[in-house]
Image 1 (cartoon, rainbow, N blue to C red):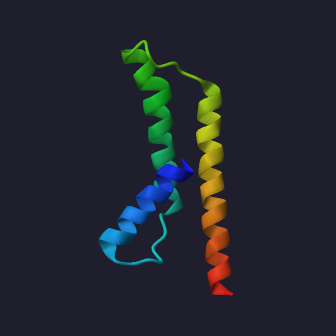
Image 2: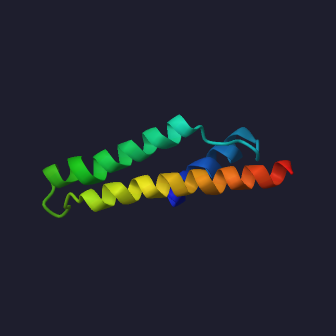
Length: 80
């Protein structure tokens, strides 16, 4: 999730022309939920090649928290 969220943030920053733009927590959380549902619930139901794994869902959540932690620590450094 940190990679996906960082790519999304970079893309939005380029489109908007604002290098200080932050992804709102709600949107980052929603994107994490969509990824977890898509890759761990929907795809395993429609294709035998994919497997549902609760550990992966937990890792999506950990990645989300890590992204927030890194972004907020960067934000605090720039304010000081």
